Length: 283
Image 1 (tube, rainbow, N blue to C red):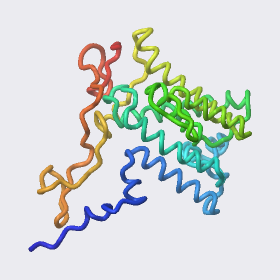
Image 2 (image 1 turned 30 degrees about the vertical axis):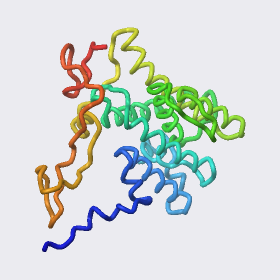
Image 3 (image 1 turned 135 degrees about the horizontal axis):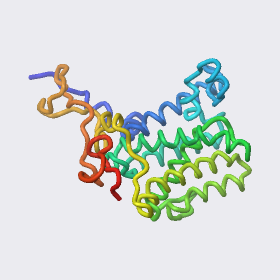
């Protein structure tokens, strides 16, 4: 009799590890890195000053990690930071599961493209916003509210709540914003995220309908990496089928398999950006 294979039973009891691994791919990495980075800064492992956005340090000292670290450091440990972590993981996974289709069938690659657009727009508009109001040089909450706003426009009638108060998703970003103002908390970064989110929504949803032009397209390298539709991580395949590698009794299918897209992109007319994606000039 072959020895029992207990690998698949490690997470059968549930718990934090099973919950973490159940998160969608990008949400899992973003939340995990944000949690670790915030803990490292608060426990003195790394100085918070090494994590914030400082253009002079990037330009003069080539501290290129500052293009990423501001989106992972959420500030000192307090109630607002805990809420920021909760909103990050909650709304990131909601939108990652059904993002706007910008060329990858409404899947993981489209969500990655949206985050890249949000991050680039936050960097580009930060100096302008900073001239009008005081904005912190950390962008974790800014990017989170970008996601929340875009999700609320993608699913405007979805049920949502804040401290038990029920509302439609379309009202949620402004409810959070109003609550932050009433509590005397920092809110300018939330405004910044909402503004960038509205820009993305306008370009991806309004412009194609009103002007008949597709402006935002998921880059090919993201489609090549994540495929079309929702990304499926490597997983065990019963009976050794699926063409993956094997170690002992464990067999895995190759990574990068995808679920069928919920909203397949057009296949004719215009230039096909990224192969199989939404075509230029299509509505």
